[in-house]
Image (cartoon, rainbow, N blue to C red):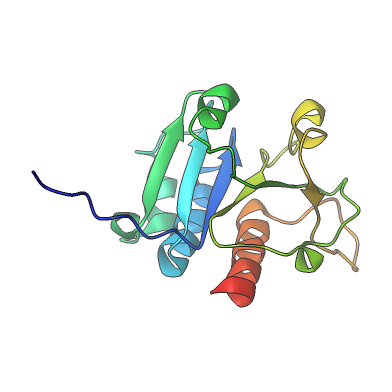
Length: 157
């Protein structure tokens, strides 16, 4: 009888709810690869993982990413343990991401590029925002996910 070694807890999990842009997802995957974070994609997507833009952005980093694909928010939720901590990132939040106390294995949730997280989902979770002192509607998804994941690295890495 062989024993399964306990898998190490990843730095964090980056969760993209209904992502629309292949290039953004490819860049997020690269960030996950270099940080040791896991990537979760929740359908529907606005592209195919075989998309040329995705391949160009992810380059050869995909082999280093643990990628999970989920058919829906409910399917994703069903994979979470009762102790899982999911942080929703939104321009509608009042708390700044760097003030949160992250722990290894936290889930960082981001919505689609064109509209962000749906209200029902955003309001059901603790919300964080990245400051935008220069104004603008929102940061690029890959930039926001990278900034958040690197904050987890800074705090617990």
